[in-house]
Length: 190
Ligand code: 5GP
Image (cartoon, rainbow, N blue to C red; front, top):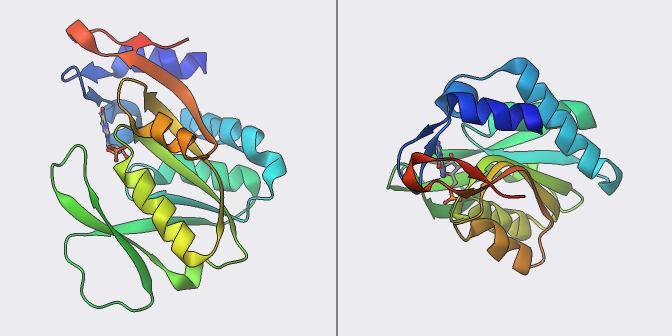
């Protein structure tokens, strides 16, 4: 997506060699037109896979996951994040470290909204070490549903998350791949 790359160059802020701030288009402000275009791209790639639900983790994945679910004509379910887990027997839960916040949170999805018959497409904003995605994969496995793939807006290739999941057999597609953020410069892969 050339438009997306251009917006990342114009509006992204390199915070360090590891972190790219994308508040202007993904993590704080959302451009509806651009986001719907991202949804179309993911829907095109996974249209023939019989997706029954799109799943993401709150909050930054919700807008693009909504756009994808809208294009595919299926419901969107977002995992909730909570700091403490009170006994919630109907919830599937995994504990995951948060890359940007430096804390550990629980991500939860109610069994009401994910069933063994589901074919799930996981959508998220950015992948770094892959902890959020791995937590979600575990939840989906425990639900008995099938994970048919993952769509990620920005893949940071210099961190291990995306390739580790591919090596485990997950079909992971990203819209933009970033090879490096060194010296304050955004270098795209490919
Ligand atoms: P992971 O679990 O893959 O290490 O990190 C995934 C989550 O952390 C993403 O959903 C995203 O919200 C946040 N994140 C990871 N790297 C970055 C980054 O470079 N910039 C921003 N803004 N968020 C990031």
